[in-house]
Amino acid sequence: MSEAPCIAIKQLSKRFSPLGPLVLDSVDLDVAPGEFVTLLGASGCGKSTMLNLIAGLERPTSGSISAPKVAFMFQDASLFPWLSAQRNVELALELRGVPRLRRSIEAARLLDVVHLTDAAHKKPHELSGGMRQRVALARSLAQDREALLMDEPFAALDAITRDLLHEELLRVWRETGRTIIFITHNVREAVLLGQRVLLMSSRPGRVVGEWSTTGQDAAALTTHITAELRKEIRRHAS
Amino acid sequence: MQAETRTTVPSTSGAPVTDLRAQPPTPIPDPDPGAHTGRELDAGLDALQQQAVPPIGWSSRVAKALLPLAAVGAVIYVWQMYVWLVRPRPDVLPGPAEVLGTLRDLLADGQAQAVILTSLERGFAGFAIAVLIATPIGLLLVQSRFLRGAFGPIISGLQVLPSVAWVPAAIIWFGLSDATVYFVVLMGAVPSIVNGLISGVDQVPDQYRRVGHVLGAGRWVLVLKIVLPAALPGYVAGLKQGWAFSWRSLMAAEIIATGGALGFGLGGLLEQGRVLSDMAVVMAAVLIILSIGVVVELLLFGPLERRLLRRRGLLVAGTS
Image (cartoon, rainbow over the protein chains, first blue to last red):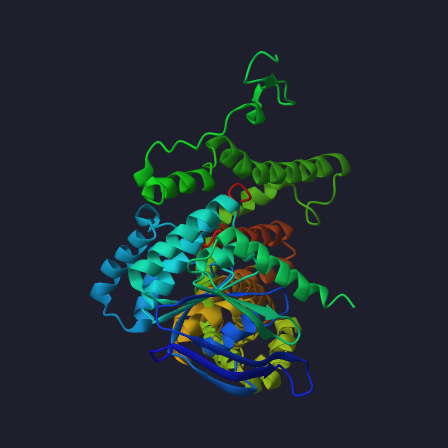
């Protein structure tokens, strides 16, 4: 990589207690600015732990992480139920230090980016799951951070909504040039979204495979990575 | 059938099903390619996926209001039948008509209004002081794990202790003054409100704190903007219980501590009825105390709590 990476992870290891099992084992990962990387792995491979470490929600046991402040999208939208969609976005702006007068204009603009202008004044419980995730996306864009970490954000949605959100996320990524690390256990999703797909092994979590999706036949790559993922899962059978 | 390229097979739902295998493959026609990734698709899906909440009809509202009234009517009916059939001594159990008459007399000469005013004033003042004392204590305990570990059990214990138990001590300390009454009220209400605030904060999902952290909130901003708003329903539940404890404690204090510099409240009226063996006054006073409790709940805490929960989608339409 020619330019300096946006996120650089070196020899990162994590245990939750000194005698506990190794959750992440010497992970190395460089993510270039503006790159879209998908992290793929079965349950228990430490994908979420890795994002939490990058976001500073947890501390590494050893190794180093160099990352800018990041925005984070969780599997559930995690909107605050007492605030409207608009206010949820405004809160992110407020915590970023945007002056009061600019907040509502900016929030309205961000909600328009995710096509939610009409739902701006609705409370989260009045929105569908897909709409809530779009509000969450608008909120993470409101943070205006270089990098966006996404922890299986579409896993709980139905297939139609998920397809739509994939297109929307790619559009937003192209428009904003954010660096994105996206976690999923869905191979199709990983290949569809990522420029680069990383496969992680489970217990301990290590990066065991890496594919570039540019210029590749998506279907063939999906089949190939699925086979690799299954091989990885089968290893735990014995 | 074989002569046709498109065959129709019966389906379980009764509607004809087109067998796609018999059709030549054609690309899915897109009526408007420009809107494919755009707003219309989103808007259509959004409209399909949001459930419209049906407004609560008037008939069900009326029914909901009438039901408790019918129950009150039934109780009065049983009471009246008992008085007619068993004919208890009127100084032991007067009938509904007699109690109502006494109530009317008490209202007519202004005595009822005076005692209600005295008690309500004390009740609300005591409750307000309790809120002012309990809220900072609760906030402090919520913030410091150390303080909470130390004082949490004491406060839970105080909540179980009937506040009437403080009356003798209060009389020794403060004599027969309003301070005695307020002390007992505070000992009843403060632990409830503190506990309500603590349990409200305990029930805040950890995820909210993580989101706050990711959004860049510092410790105090996190508390003010996220934890406390999230804990509001628990706090209001604590306030509601705190009011109930204030009111109960007040009545207990007023019954036991009468005379001296003390104003004459509902508890005093009750005690006076007992001393004069005037059962109708006793029952009228009980009815007043009961209805004030119900009215405050119906007019103040009920709507407040419902509004709070409904705005957060925690109350399913039609359940209350």
